[in-house]
Each structure stands twice: as C-alpha cells, then as structure tokens.
Image (cartoon, rainbow, N blue to C red; front, side, top):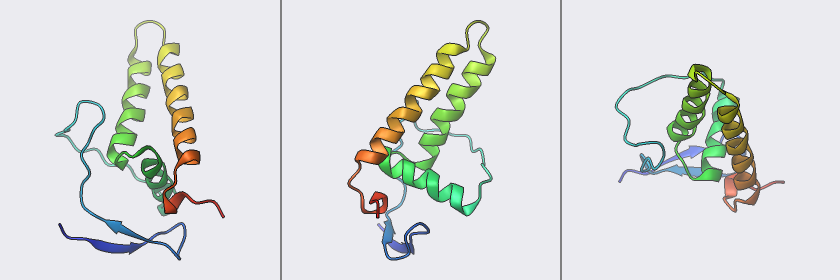
Length: 108
C-alpha cells in the first residue's frame, strides 16, 4: 500500500499518513454513485477531524448526515424522528471527538 505524507492543515507540526481507502462500514456500503460537496479547505479539515474521531471516512460521515436529512424532508408524516436522529448523531460525534486520543485531535 502506498503511503503518502501530507501536512495536516489544522496543526502544521503534525504529519498525517494517508493509507488509501478505509473500509466503508456505514450505511449499506459500498456505494456506487458519486456526489460531490464543495467545501472550503477549513470545512474539509473539520469534516476530516470528525471522521477521525468517529473512525469513519469523510464519505460515510456525509452520507449518514445527508441521508438522514433527506429522509426527514421526504417523510410523509413526522420529520421530528429524523431531526432527533441527526441531533443524536451530532452529539455522538462530539463525544467521540472529545474522547479521541488521535494526535490530530489533541487539544492545545
């Protein structure tokens, strides 16, 4: 496996190693359709840090958020179930990030 070193955009003193695709372990993986999200570099870095904290790929994280949101919008009845699911996932991510021992998530 080819390992490439990249400077971490959040903390320039910490290198990260890209080891290729991680197994997609979320939401009926693998996916066969591509959707692009346009984000700033800072937003992309934050998405990556959340992914590190919850041990999911950027794609798996965004897929879960978008699918839950779309299900809520398209729900014939109560969309509150989906809103609560999004809120619960956000809190799970916050907890995982705060408890992570990963060097990219170390607080200064």
